[in-house]
Structure formats: C-alpha cells, structure tokens
Length: 79
Image (cartoon, rainbow, N blue to C red; front, side, top):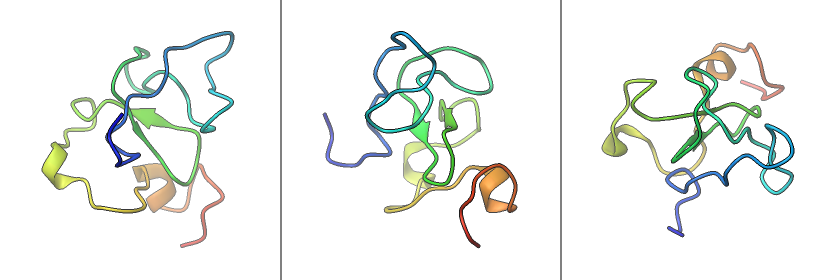
C-alpha cells in the first residue's frame, strides 16, 4: 500500500458502503463502483480520479476536500 493515503485503494465493499477503518465510502459517489478511490478528508465521500477529472499530479499532498466540502456543503469541515 502506498504511503500517501490519497492514492491508496479503498478496501472492497464488505457488509456496508462505509468502511469502518477509514470512515470513507468504499464506492465512488459518482459512478457507484469500487476500486482505487480518492477519499475526502472532510466527509465520507470517495471518488475515482477519472470521475472527477483529476490526474495523480493534480492532487495536493496532505488534506484533500471534495467539491462539496470545499464549498462548505456536505462535510463538517471548517473552511
């Protein structure tokens, strides 16, 4: 598993859509499929980078917030 938590694959969905270990969904909120997901640090959302139009080099080191959290929506993350 890579050291960068944003590039790691979220575990395959088990009994529920939310993984007890990291608190993020195990499927992409846009397409509903599992795989290598980018997990938001402000809410449980997870995305395939291709689904949000991002490349590996465009994801910053450290905290990453989905569009909803960045705009002050879904998560409880303070801006």
